[in-house]
Image (tube, rainbow, N blue to C red):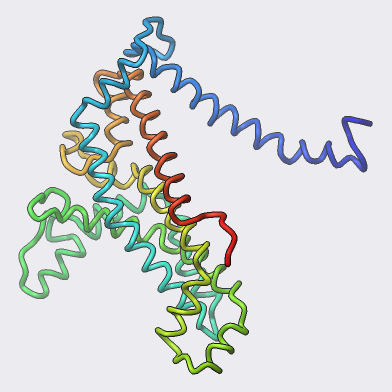
Length: 302
């Protein structure tokens, strides 16, 4: 009776939650704990090392110029993708929210790319849209205006590869954040807009600035935090867009791509890679907490 609980609610709780909790622990927390364990050992080509090295792996990662350069790549990527996605998703949400007909259709159309695999989208951008030869869509359009062809993913001056990386991420994730903004917009009380109209506020920029955007404060903070965290975890689009049979180029290498080659490359230094992963996780945690404190996440509204 104690196991089943009143009206068997305890049993049904574990029936629904148990498989998820088991999978989460087995495939997430156990690998995380083992990664922290490996970071304190000399783990070349093995996941069961015996040579304890303490904090040497962490010191080596922090002295590695390639690792610090990958963090700079992350900062550049964040500077592009966070404001671009924020503005695009907010604009889409505002437009869809104003529709009086076919709102569900346009909401589904803009959200549909979220279901697409990052790998598939990256290959489409690489092979079809931004192909560096004359068969690519982008170069075909440029040819209509008499412009020269561009090797989008191999030209570093100017760095056209950023255009490819940012646009594919924008296409993939803008719809998800649009839905979050839509949920925030639909929670704004209508009487605020009525009161603003009575007070003489002009529809458009004034209403957005003084009514809509302040009411989206909590949603905007959550979206910004998620965008920064997702930027830290960027891997699929970088790896599938820039790597080829010769390997990965030395430019535009984010932290996860660098750690991938460190842990699973020729050296297979799992201890060093695990130390880098722990450092990256700590950076994400510190940045997230600092952002939450800065924006006042969870603070009561006035």
